[in-house]
Image 1: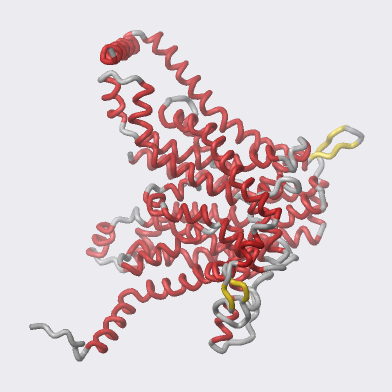
Image 2: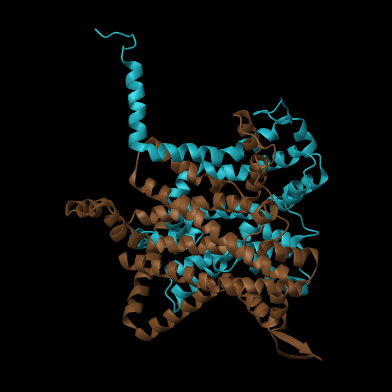
Length: 313
Length: 287
């Protein structure tokens, strides 16, 4: 009984295949129907993204550029002039820039040597280093903040250890900009190391050996072979970290000073505490504009990476 | 005959081999020591605080261990309400995300249509904005739609976060399935549904479970979207943590909650090796 059912469907499959190859018109309509089904399947997530990312962002941009006088909307930059004439707002923006750039520099200073080390060494120490470097992936941001307060704070673990070995006068970075940078670097280590190490794995050992055979020194190998190959992963790590830091909230809110604030904290205060959605929106759009180029860089780099990969396969 | 006694040059050779390790892998050794202090140090404090009844400065370990604060923490009404709610919320968001995204992922992997690559890449937009600015932008719309302080609003803002991961990982998995196996099964007469269930599904299952697990954990810890859209009426566990941290009347409350909240992440840690080898950990960033 079952066997006959299967053989039936088998013959159906075969005849279906034959008709598709033999009748171009039928295949055209099938193809069209297939595409329609595909669009139907990809529509829900796309719709959600359009409704919750593109439309809010575009609407915010449009609204911050218009002002309605007697019910008639017109173009105006007044919201932006208001932002840039307020010293607190400008200070917060500059502070966000400073923290972002310093954190990025620190991330690369920490992660680049780690990634190089992990790529070119093996053994027990290297695998322990790898586990430790990836460990922050498994510590959620909010728990990290609590942990860092207990670790770095006055009379925290670090303070205790230092006083036990005779170093007194510990000044905590908690509630200072330094604590924000420490927290953000801590959080960024695993992702950055993963991406950079993955990039370095594209550099084959044989390539390096043959370069060495023709007399290249370490510096030449680094500059001529490793650097070009790691440019793309480094760009991805740079742009994603930039966006992540610029748009961060939890770490600067819980670890940083009350003033100046990073833009995320500033926006939440404007929206949630002061209940001024219009001003919060202007602040948000200003972060969009600043990050637009970096966001574009990120999308373009990932897109190129994928297209090269597909060509390779 | 071998002697069991310590050879006379044991200590010199040990010292020499230690020196050799430093010479050979000095950077590794240094990196390991620094990372142990910097990565594990903060966590050491939290874990011990959760089991401390008293911890007087300057002692390296609690002056008195005990579980008294566990009972106190879990008799707080806000925590008792937020914890089950957060778990259910994360489950609902993960399920909805799967229902919305998995068919799309199948289409991206298997069907040919115009703009496929472009549409797939468009999901990177979820990462290409400064996150909190985007949340404010969404919140302003929700404010006008009266979605602030509603569960629906929180679900929607958390769903956005899941899209990239839930589409990219399964798409890659469906693409990686060996088509000849499916065709062979079709040729011997299996129905398309049966082929899907018995051949395709088992092959993509590791990737699908990775995507589901990562989505669940990420959603469970998502605090910023829930904070800006959910307050004042919807309070998830991570949002509650903000106030526990800010009003540090009792250090142990925060420590106990951190410890409990950490459990889902430890789940990830157990399968970390598999996640890493599958490249799923970086897939969420579109890499």
